[in-house]
Amino acid sequence: MIYKDHNGEAIQGASPEELIMNLKNGSRFGSEQELQEYMDEMAERVKQYRGLTTAPRTDSCENFMNDLEACGYWRRVL
Image 1 (cartoon, rainbow, N blue to C red):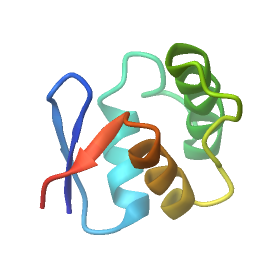
Image 2 (tube, helix red, strand yellow; image 1 turned 90 degrees about the vertical axis):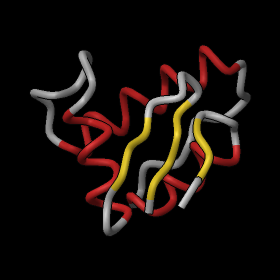
Image 3 (tube, rainbow, N blue to C red; image 1 turned 45 degrees about the vertical axis):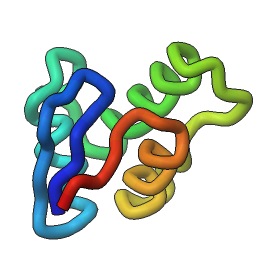
Image 4 (cartoon, rainbow, N blue to C red; image 1 turned 180 degrees about the vertical axis):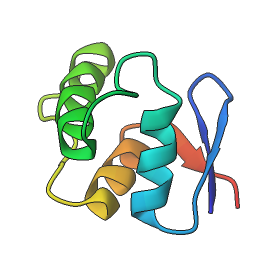
């Protein structure tokens, strides 16, 4: 699967976990973090920057991926 983020950058992965790991590894904020720590901190940043009332869920990579799409952070292109 391939997603494009709000900046037009493509992120791909064969599974939700691989997709989020690739997003993390390309991040200036989280490349050194554990995956859960990255998702937790990114969820708070997305909540603030997007003006959301609740942060994206971080209980699983699949929920995190779906919530990022639902709030407009990225969209699936393939």
